[in-house]
Length: 239
Image (cartoon, rainbow, N blue to C red; front, side, top):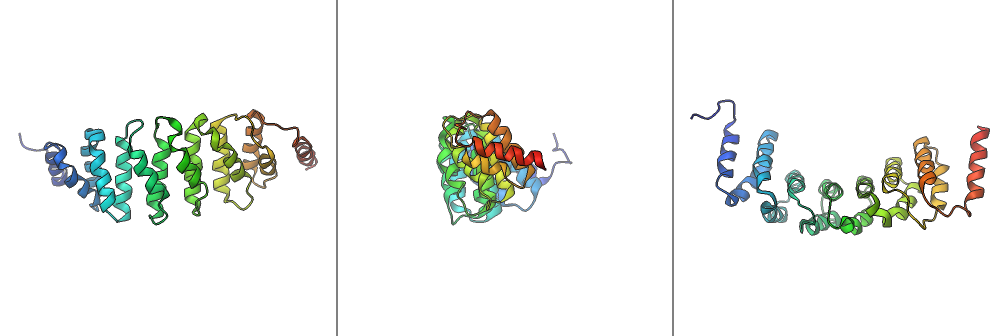
């Protein structure tokens, strides 16, 4: 029959391209650079059914497309298609580590790394730990959040998150994200609790609350820090 008159010409063309099979992928990926949000969404919907088959074409596009917005679109599309343990982990890791890459593209790569159930779960740990030291605050926040998404698999990152939480020079949103991620990771043996004591002295009540909550649930060696904790408790009682 006749096509639905409410469907745009672009959507009809995209649908027709999809029916030609994987050969259409380069053309569809090129359409992700269209200024129309509805066109880009139609492209994402058309490519999604191809699943992992589309990943090599996306990797090729990321190697050739230089504009920021299309690169972000490609990474978001990649997130939809990734199966567990996909080799695209190396692609995302390379982008996240690339200091010459646009910050928005690196940020998207870190978010995708944190949103996927990699196999093994700790596969993304090295790049996320490195990203905690990034110069840009949004990258540090994204890395801390991504580590929290890994839950117990991110236990090796707990000490570094503790130091981030306790760093008085760190941006408050990054410190709060570190505190929340520590809560998500859960108790970790053999941690140095002294950074947590510093966090309990923070002027930010949310940071103090998060630090206290983690301290209460963690199996930490507190003998050395007990005097400090008692001092903080007495100071709070006197307020």
